[in-house]
Image (cartoon, rainbow, N blue to C red):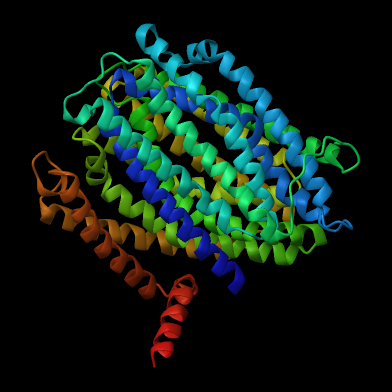
Length: 535
């Protein structure tokens, strides 16, 4: 368990650095092209498409099948090397083909997202540079999941740092060359050079993120060679497992398509798809640092337990991971809900609209992270059909709810969409845990629920304390200190965040939470080790 804790901490540190850089990159992008401008929503839509297409053909499929399949192939006489080379070669061919076709179909793809006229033309211009990202996104996941399956977690987590560094540099060059929206340059006319620098710079960052992973293969005893002999290494079973995941991702992308169309319907001057993307970036910050890091560290172990039929060990790992996630995610949700307006003010002076979207998303952060945990549990069991089932329910809830958001005024439509997504996550989480319990004979539910109610009580207490102190600092009305500017927003957030942390931990101590001691153990052990070393 200690090794899992160290792996989670290392993954979290890499994710933290990457997310902070990503946050800075997103901030710079908003300053460069605005939050609710025509160019902002056009660029955002063009970057949604490669991620959507990639997700359909790769992301979930690879996450679902690669680790379990590589774990199983590792018992082969060659340690799974032939299987890995064949799988990587096949993936590269598929990704290259899809990227080429998608790029040629850029005008058609852009027409699906509700953009019209000049905005659609600009989105298409961005898409020609953005859609090749499909290949590099796929390659990054292929190479990274192989490293993860071999328990080399660091490179996959730290590689996005390279991407964000390249992105920040390219955005800096764009601002220097063409000016920034935040300083009055609204970019009413976009030249081919501007489009290439903005969208092409993002693609360059993803290329660097993927290719840097090749440098770490030798550390795990692998050397990539193209191998087009795709028969004889059980790829058929992988394809069968991928089928349900493919269907699941089609369902999620249908929901995403509906969300983007409804969000783009608000027009210029209102929070739309770009504002939602930036709110989602903040939402994903704790999820990526906490949930993804913990689950990634436990995923391979659960796959090994499932392969041996050791369900008791599987359940223990699942319970430990779920409670570790909740311990930190509940606190993160509480802090970000209280500080939603100051956090949004870091991005834009129109902080209320983005802040409302962020609050609506954050309501679903805990169930969203628990669904991620449950999906990986099913994947480690070799079951991709059940995640499709509970994701299909989520998709139906989202599509029906988001279409109803057409009736919501434009000022609040994006927030309403985000609220529907959160509600769907609650439904999905409850169903996922019920199905996993039936599949494994139990998930240590009593212990998980005992931890959850204590986390929620402590979270509410911290929100009351944090909200009160935010009022003392001046509140969130226009002109008040916490939202008077980006620096004041950061300072206020730091102060309130510390207070909420103290109250949260204090209430967990009063409630005698056993998960508090387990959660703080790695920190206390490290502090004790440093203290003894100094002596």
